[in-house]
Image (cartoon, rainbow, N blue to C red):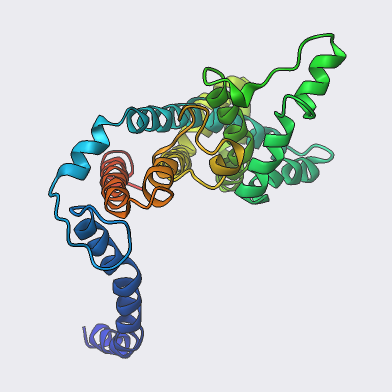
Length: 293
């Protein structure tokens, strides 16, 4: 007991030294801006001077009357669904491939991870050129086969599907690296025991590997959900939220209808709504699915 008391006393100087600066920075750059955004959301304010036109809950009512906001909410939901149903399974499959002792596995890891290393803005600009209906790669391929070049990013019925393809390409490498780390942490003797018992490759994956990767899969889904709600940097150079707001996400909606139109009060209300959605989903997911991790 005395040793434990000495150890606890030894921690107090470290806590007193490092905790106050961290709390100060967190308060200045997180807590106070959040409080200010919540306060400004009750005003009709363009960002200049002091807010003085109190409108109460009018900004929040206006948000949910906007068809562009509802479209952005649906788009974020679709991004989450595609991330969970396509991106993560693809990453898991590739992780199982590149962790095998095959020639060139490390090179393939690097190739698959490179899109994630690329800056989001750069990726958006590259794919905007790829999709370009006049000079892009897609247009040249279509002409090669004697077809009229498509203008996917200008078609409101197709543009968002083109964006989803870029999202899968851009971020599956991150999830792949998570699964590679999880696969390397699995005890090889467990897999060897499954081989001795005569398990097939599919049986080993579904009954041994996948259950042992449970915590990694849950973490990957958590990152996919939170990241999908924060998607912004790649959308703006790729489509700017168009055409006709068909590719808006919650963050691009905030930027387009709040910042660009100098409606800071309205944009603050959108930020508060986005914050509530993110916090609710994050804490609910962690409480339900990651409580034992």
